[in-house]
Amino acid sequence: MSNRFVKFENVGMRYGMGAEILQDISFVLEPGSFHFLTGASGAGKSSLLKLLYLAHRPSRGIVSMFGDDVTTAHRTALPRLRRRIGVVFQEYRLLDHLSAIENVAMPLRLAGGGDDHKIREHVEELLMWVGLKDRMHAKPPTLSGGEKQRVAIARAVIAKPDLLLADEPTGNVDPQMARRLMHLFAELNKLGTTTVVATHDLELVHEMGGPVMHLQDGQLSSRHLPERARGPVSATDPSRPNLSANLSSDLSS
Ligand SMILES: Nc1ncnc2c1ncn2[C@@H]1O[C@H](COP(=O)(O)OP(=O)(O)OP(=O)(O)O)[C@@H](O)[C@H]1O
Image (cartoon, rainbow, N blue to C red; front, side, top):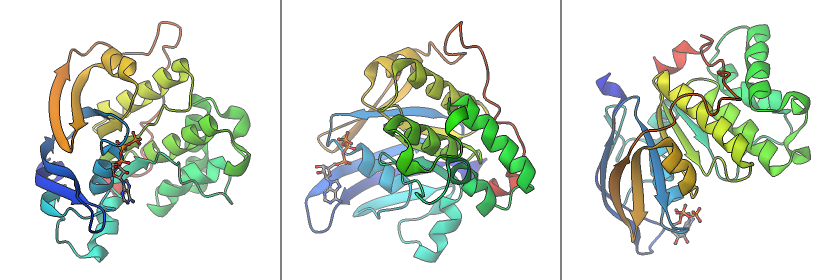
C-alpha cells in the first residue's frame, strides 16, 4: 500500500518568472482517502491539481507520488505515473473526432484492458448511469456543456485509477445530477481510489462531509467536516454504478 501515498512537503509553485501562487504546501493523501479542495476563484485549486497530475513542476519542495519523488524525475518517467491518475479537467479535454463511447473507452484501450465487446458493454453501462443513454454515439462538438462534463467524468473513472482528480466536476449540471456524480465518486472511492474534488459548491461539500483542503492566499489549510452522505444519493435513486468490472487491473500494477 505504501507505494500509493501522495505526499507534498513545503511545495511552492509559480508560473514562469511570476510570484509564487502556492507557498509551503504540505499534505499527505492516504491511499483510499476522499478530499474536497475548496477556495475562492483564483486561489490556486487548478494549479494544485496540475502539480498532482504532474503537468507542472514545483518551484521548490518535494512531491512524492505513489512512493516516487517526482520533483526531479525525468519526463520520460511521468507517463507511467500519469496512467495511475484519472483527471476530470475543467475544460473537459475530450477528443472531438471520437464519439462519447470511444472517448470513455480510451483509458481501457490504452491499458490493453479486456476485449472489445466487454469494453464497450462496460462503457455503455457507465454512460447510461450518468444519463447519457441517448448521446453515446454523439461527438463532443454536438454535446452540451453538462453532457461533455459527464463524458469527461466517465472517462476519468472507467479504469478505476489509483488517484482521481476532478476540477469543478459538477459545475455544469443540475443539483440532482451533481449528487449522482458525487455518488459515483464515492463508490469509486470505496473501491480504493484516492479522490480529490475541487469545487465551489460548498453545499455539496457540507452534504458529503469528510476532509476538506482549503486554499487561501497561497496557503493550504485542512479541516474535517462530519460525514453525512456517503450512502446512496437519495431514497429515489438507490442504484449503484457498476464500477467493479475487472477490465483494467494492469493499470495499477
Ligand atoms: N498558465 C498560467 N500562467 C500564469 N498564471 C496563471 C496560469 N494559470 C493560472 N494562473 C494564475 O494562477 C492563479 C491561480 O489560478 P487557478 O486557476 O489555479 O485558480 P482556481 O482556484 O482553480 O480558480 P477557479 O476557481 O476560478 O478555477 C490565478 O491568479 C491565475 O490567474
